[in-house]
Length: 490
Image 1 (spheres, rainbow, N blue to C red):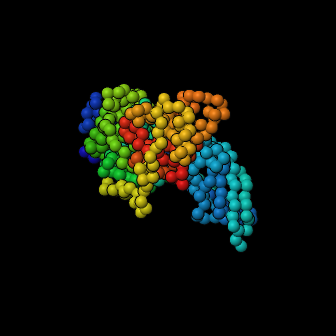
Image 2: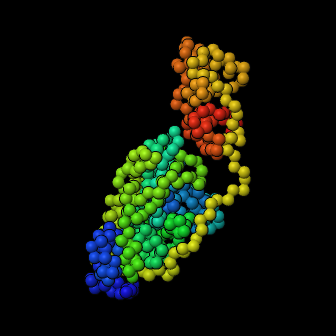
Image 3: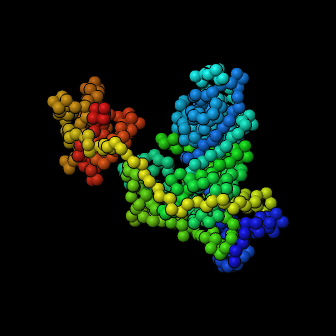
């Protein structure tokens, strides 16, 4: 038994179409079976609302008088990319404002624009005969623009991993703040509501597929970047008219000590053309599987610790190594359901017809990592032996070692070389000035550390953001095996 797009669209026009959300389809199939569902249900709607870092907007301002050809421009102090026509630009959601980094970025500009707020445009030009204006400082709103096109080169991930952190330090990632020693877990995606989860073989999704995007109508315009179907990590390239969208479904976001992004609402209708699609759209959270990945390992091929279902993830906690870990979602299930329900109502009201894709998404794309042509250096390549004193050592002995060895850092350990703290030459100077006698009075116990296989760039970043000049190097048992300082990095 098969249906066609034209038959379903005819039902939409005459008001006889049967539409269910993906969650409703699960219950319908449980009660009536696949065959009846394929006969009676015409469309299943899906939805997701989560951070989509590969998002941005193309904007056209129109020509000023006299005209300008932008070379550099900012929108609310967020740099936008000009390298196209004179008064076109692209603003990406992860670009942060120079004056408020980590607080405001391109995603917030887009949200403010859709909210109707005025945006300050500042631009400069090197000037030409036909574009003589050198500088612009003005304000505009969404209505003032000729075109405002939301463009997401990578959206609608088929699934996401669950992120945890095995290290002894809190880390800040695009999966949120991950507490040390498996202190929490974060995941994303709406599971059984996720669009590509309901059509995993891309039978109905491809070039020209009409979708819900940001509260308005959008279209799939191809495979997304990093599209990796063999691993069930398919992605979508989508676009839509910002002037139709709503701030409820386009929200600027800030990630602590990571950067900015934007939450994007996406919903795709799946036409039930055959029994196979009826079965696929009835997928349950317990059938959607992903991996728990250790983000505490600073490398691309982080280890997958365990496979887990979205039913477990949505429960609020997961089990890992015999430990119960609190688990939170970066995706709003409330908004995902609202998107699926809104799309359902559009179709039921005859306001949204389905488009057959001109071309379906490829299923054989291979995701390739970046090729590095220069040798990557690691901490083990630059570390040196650490000067060590025990935690019961006299301050005078520590001072003598600093002078004799001409070093600025003394690592404090117990007699098993387990890290207890660090003392600097400045600490010794302070001890003398403040007449302190005991090492415990001046030792820094909260120490940032590194390991042999951490890239040098990671170590340098730790020093920079924490305003420190050295990192003890530890093995897996937290024993000190060396030190790397700002001198080695320089």
